[in-house]
Length: 141
Picture 1 (cartoon, one colour):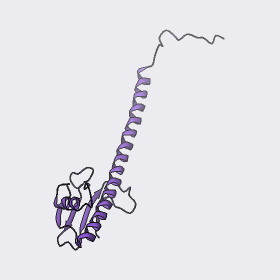
Picture 2 (cartoon, helix red, strand yellow; picture 1 turned 45 degrees about the vertical axis):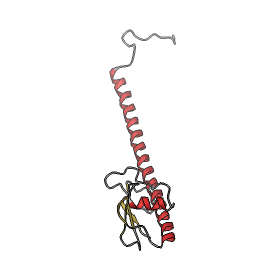
Picture 3 (cartoon, helix red, strand yellow; picture 1 turned 120 degrees about the horizontal axis):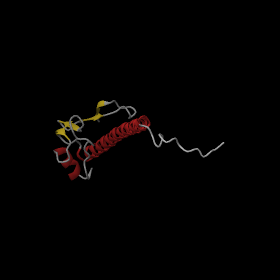
Picture 4 (cartoon, one colour; picture 1 turned 90 degrees about the horizontal axis):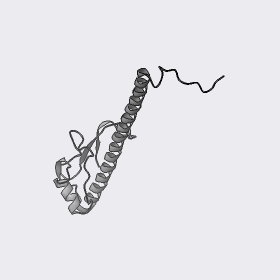
C-alpha cells in the first residue's frame, strides 16, 4: 500500500460548493457576533442611564438640602439648560449628564414647577436592569 498517493489530475483544490459553504458559515458567525455586540451596547447604555439618573437624583437632593427647594425647570436636560446651570453653579455637579443617545425619546426630562417636588423621566432600551421597565421610567423624590 502506497500512503503517498497523488491527487487525481482533475482534483487540485476546493470545489465551488465547498467554498460557498465555508463563506456561508463565516457569514453566519459574523452575523451572530454583530448581533451580540449590539445587545451589549444597548445594555451598556441602559446601565449608564440608570447611573446618570441616580447621580441626578442625588444632586437634586443635595440642592434641596442647601436651598430648601428643587430647581424650577420644565424641559429636557441638555447640559446648558436652567437645571444644569443651577446644579453646576451650586457645585452639586461639575457636569450634568445627558442621555447616551440623546435623540427622540432617549433624553432626560425634568419638571419642577413649584420647587416642592420634581419629576425626572428617562427611557430604557432593554429589560436588562432589574426593577426597571423597558421604555418609560421616572424618578420622584
